[in-house]
Amino acid sequence: MNLTPVLLFLTSFVFSANNIGVIRPGFQGTAYRRRVLYLGLTALGFALGFFAEGYKVGSGIVRDISPPTQSGLELSLLVTLLVMGAFTLLRLPSSISNVAVGALLGPLVASGGLPPVGPLTTIVVAWLVAPATAALLSLAIYAVHNKVIWAWPLLKVSMFNRYFGILAILLSSYTLSANNLGMLTSFGSGALDSALILIAALLGVFILSNLVASTMGWKLAVLTPGSYSSALLGGSVNLWVYTQLGIPASLTQSVVAGVMVLSLVTRPSVVNTRTMFEILGSWPFFLAISFVAAFGAWFLL
Image 1 (spheres, one colour):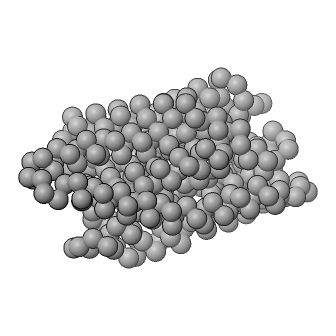
Image 2 (image 1 turned 90 degrees about the vertical axis):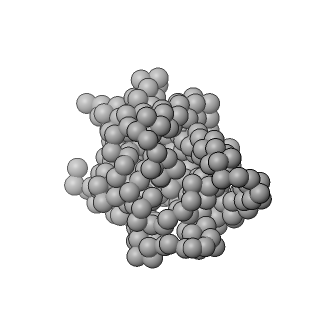
Image 3 (image 1 turned 120 degrees about the horizontal axis):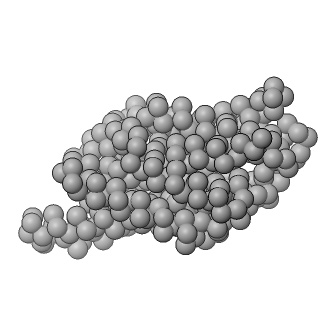
């Protein structure tokens, strides 16, 4: 029995519910009608990114670290689903690229295969560099933003930040889909699997994404609309670069890095250090727990 379509659907839904929670603080506090509009823009960005550039990561180096058998791929998907689901319920923003790579390596190693050093090194180096470059991009965008609006009246600044936020929402959802949803296509094949991935992700945009949004928008740091949009744009540009290289990366880690840096350099600064360290500490844990779970499950199933 081929379980791949079902697992792809559920994994895409959970991924979207988790990672859209990183984008949603960009429009929290707005009227209900406007929130619905912004969620619609997020869904539009998801669809555009998936169709325009999703193939770049789906056909990239992720396939080089995949298990050789269909059962191995399905096990990797199952572990990815369970780990992402658990962290979503815990309201922690999670990187599906970290989780999925660990889940792919588990069955590969358990079945006697050797992890390809070149592709794996490229991915790990990208993960280490991405938060730093995203933080720098966020700082640069925020500096330009402030230079543009510094002499404007308050009403004009409010209007500018609204459109600035719309741009950030569209681009971040576009790049998130192009990179991470594109990565999920490497688990499946054909138009049906691709359609299931996109449909499930669009459903996740509207359902459950408020869970992680509460952590990003209220528990981690308090930022102005302009500064949070700067973090979203910085993370989006950062992720777009990795998409062109076919490397699975994380919008979550990029945006969190931007949020933390901007919250530290802006005044007044309101940062929940406990939540910050919980998020930072969970990043290497994603890779480790998914690898161990998939490795152990290979011998049990």
